[in-house]
Image (cartoon, rainbow, N blue to C red):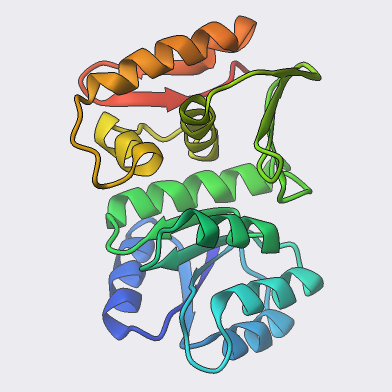
Length: 226
């Protein structure tokens, strides 16, 4: 049974995540701030930590950094702030995923499942700056992508789409989700823009073009061949 640590000072959020996590068969522990999270992680091991950023005493980023110095536990960060700076800073301190509030509990569970599975199979990148999927390597700090060791030239939108898909590998992402993540919530254009950009992106991925799967009526999913 996988063990989940929830770190959040909002009781309603904690209750919501607990309810869905227990339905998935997870053993759940919850604490209210980063300092408590650090202390409980000294005593116990967990398969994943779901942690809010803004908390009293010790914030989520600081807690994540200190926990990572002790143990290799994947961290999914929750925040009401969804700016690129916050996300990049989170990845720099070692988080595995970043979910903005409000969120879908079902999607959160899907992300948790993928992260636990990837970590248990040894697929979690050792360096938070590098994201690997087959022969594709994404340098998140340098904003570069390499295919089998050779850098390829992507536009900002192509890079954003690839990063979003690979970060959420195994999860079906709708066109609206991709638009919101890559273009921003104030984008009012046609969602078919995503289809065109993905067509261009596939053309640059060479033999890995089929890693981006079209899920009819739902969106897109990134999955490398086994």
